[in-house]
Length: 158
Image (cartoon, rainbow, N blue to C red; front, top):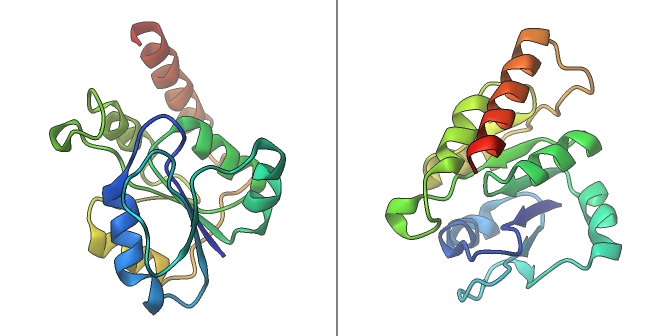
């Protein structure tokens, strides 16, 4: 199963519409957590929010995660060893107050098990592939240090 999650704080109809537009072409069923979105998917199962008690089970059952670039979801995908496709929210489209998600993906792109889709076509292409899962060991101490440094800086200014 493909799990699409947008978090609970902000709507992300652009992501939900994109996956819904090609969900029938995918080889795996799709479950979308749409949060506060107003778009109602037509071609995939959806729920507003995943209950906390069900969250781990749903994550464990998923073969791939599609998400906004929320660091909590990235860390959860890593914990469960699931590949994650990140679609950053964009301030220019009114999806967030600033472009911190673009900054986040710039630090995560190329890491094992993390894929960044900047367009609907890239997202669809990733979903049609058999994506590698993240390793439980980060192959690069320097990469880990870079990410930790970035996150500390982000948290200090946020």
